[in-house]
Length: 266
Image (cartoon, rainbow, N blue to C red; front, side, top):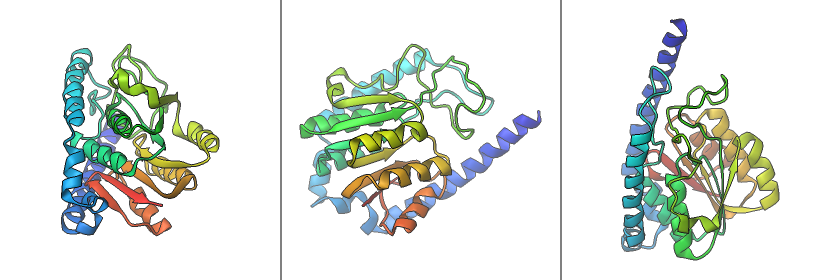
C-alpha cells in the first residue's frame, strides 16, 4: 500500500513539473522568435517545403496504420498508474527533426532511445532523401508481457513499450533500413565505446531514459564528439532542467523544435 502511494506521489510530482515546463517552454517558443526552428532556414517557404514533402505524408500514413497494429497487440498496463504506450515524439516534432536533417545533411548520426521507431523512421527518411548519412541507434527495450527485475529501468519511465514478438524499430519501413545500425543496451554502457569508435559525429538525438542523471550524462558524453557546428537534439526537455542546465554550462543558445524538443549547436 505504501509503495503504491509513493509511486502515485512521484507520478503527480512529475506530471506537475511536466505541465509547468511545457507551458514555460511554449511561452518561450511563441514569444522568442530568435529561438524557433524557423530561424535555421532561409525562409518560411524552405521550411514548409521540407515539412510537407510527399514522402513525409506517406510515412505518417504508414505509421498510423502500424499504430493500429500496436493497439491490437498491446492492451494492458505496466502498473496502477501507467498503461502501455506507443512512446513516440509527436508527428509535428518528428517533421521538424526531419526538416533539420534535410537542411543540415549530417553524415554521422547517433540516437539513444528507439522503442517502436517513429522518430528513427523520420530521420532515416530524411537521410534517404539526402542520399547520405549513417544512423546508429542505441535502445534498451521494454517488451510488453515480459517480466523484468526491479531496477532494470528508470523508476520514472512511463509505459512506452514494444509489442511482444517485435524488435526496437519494428515500424521502420524496410527500404529505409540500409543506413541504420541498432545497438541493444543501455546508453551508459554502449554510448562511450560507440563514440570512441566513431571519433566524431554530426548529429545526436536523446530520447532514452529521461532522468536528469541520464540526460546530463548523454549530453556531456556526446558533446566532446560533436563536430564544430554539430547539433544536439533532445526530446522531453520538460521532464527536468537538464537541457537548460547544459545549455548554460556550455554557453550555448537553446533552440526549439517544439515546447518538448530542444536543440543546440556546438
